[in-house]
Length: 140
Image (tube, rainbow, N blue to C red; front, top):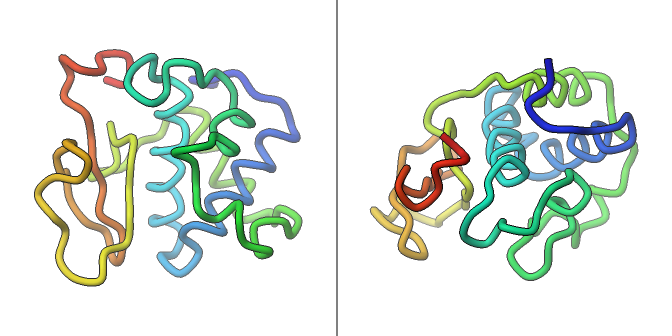
């Protein structure tokens, strides 16, 4: 059962996003980036109050994903990433991105906070940041 609404094209859009943002992190890294993406659609708080679809989430501006500005994002979805997107849409979550709404790739260590949000951990090059449950209960 899906935790967010989607259609086939949006699932492929999510697949393209996770590949473009985290292909170098392997399947687990792409799943974690997918957690952030789906959490943004699920949340009704902070920068994501008006985000209700995968398409809105992917193309959110400002505050969206850097990958949509790169040509690699616009290549077709591949089966591996489609399968990963399906898992994320079904609600699979992976620590440290379980409740995260943000991630980024610092040049050094992960700052304890990023835009007032707490670091929940790092996976390879990505640092993940989650709101508090009080600030954003809809993502928990």
